[in-house]
Image (cartoon, rainbow, N blue to C red):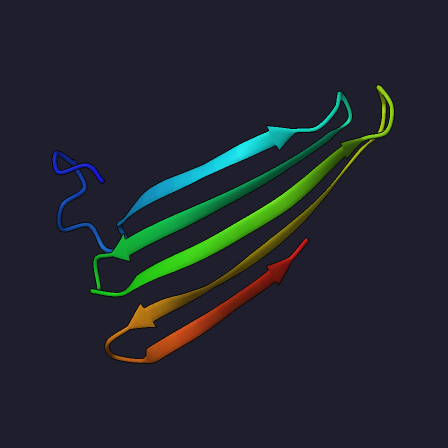
Length: 86
């Protein structure tokens, strides 16, 4: 959250604060989790939880899976639930 932003008054601006961590279980497997809080210039805000798994099967192949869940709260249009898989 930067109070010295130069885009004050610009439509569509947002700020975010992200906290999280990553655990490495071996040379080929790691997991992560993070929480992201966002605020937007239209008084809406959101809290998103993200979790993931990365698998490096070889030097040439890497797979990953991600899951996000959260809510974007908007005083004008109501809450929007977010659920994303990749």
